[in-house]
Length: 366
Ligand SMILES: NC(=O)c1ccc[n+]([C@@H]2O[C@H](COP(=O)([O-])OP(=O)(O)OC[C@H]3O[C@@H](n4cnc5c(N)ncnc54)[C@H](O)[C@@H]3O)[C@@H](O)[C@H]2O)c1
Ligand SMILES: [Zn+2]
Image 1: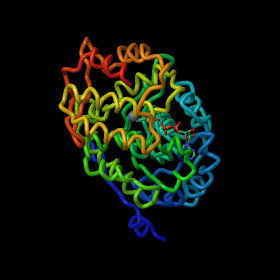
Image 2 (image 1 turned 90 degrees about the horizontal axis):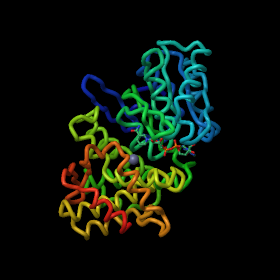
Image 3 (image 1 turned 135 degrees about the vertical axis):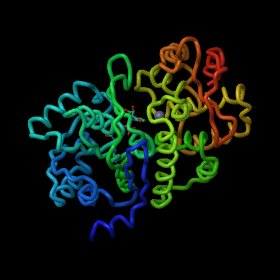
């Protein structure tokens, strides 16, 4: 099959950021076509195929064979699965392996995995020989609808998440929705927290769809992924470097969400689960400060629960730790809180009148 015939079957979106443009392809079975797809867009031949110890055994062979059959020369680099791998040390180890394999400024990096692999492989691509192209092949729902879009790459330090990083847009993003079939249910569901967030801040129609979302019909899932990529990329295009406040809307639910993740030492809740609780908190603040109708808050609860996402904290959870973490957050600057509120489902804005006391109140009630 020629590349043009392949192109027809995948839904494609072009993300435009200033002078940069790149394609995001979404379809079933794309992994087998990786090589052909990349050959179409990149004239380079050698690449690092970066993956983790869970994803590698499932999909690396298929990806590698596809690259080889398109005359590309991949070297496979597998790192231990999990957030603990997202460090400067691990990024350096990947770079060292690339140097040892003779990869240079004419090479590129392919990240095959969830958000952890997307972030660290993107960071490596941003710094290797002062920047080489990055291709994202996300394998979690969260990575498809969120982390692979927008060009933010990073690693963590002992003091916090994503403190070292770069903005480095990918050259191509390839979403094969088939790979989501092996994703553990809890991981799959946490991706829906970002989807619900997108619906609340920008897409009332999608929210209605989520209210009667049934099972995982492949085409429906493909369309949902596509729609979320459009929402995120449209917002990012307005504010690539977080300067005008537009991109901040994507932080809806994240002020309290991040604080809960931190208060639980990043072990108690997955990111999407903490975000679910953060969304509940943001809805409560929105009722007080933005006239958000309580009935819509109830609808948000129902949708989150549909995906087995938490809507209240365990009784004994240390709520004081959440407040300390909110204060630590970089969005809490010189006494003012940059807090995103929603006046109704499908819209959001950055409020300037939310106080720490408002947050204390809603956290106490969570
Ligand atoms: N760059 C951004 O804009 C951005 C946005 C949101 C989140 N993030 C980052 O993304 C990361 C979280 O991403 P994540 O939730 O995808 O985590 P992850 O990459 O750790 O993946 C979750 C787990 O699922 C496994 N896995 C991945 N794909 C699989 C598959 N298809 N089948 C079976 N198992 C699979 C992984 O090995 C891992 O154990 C965090 O580090 C977060 O900071 C970045
Ligand atoms: Zn998030």
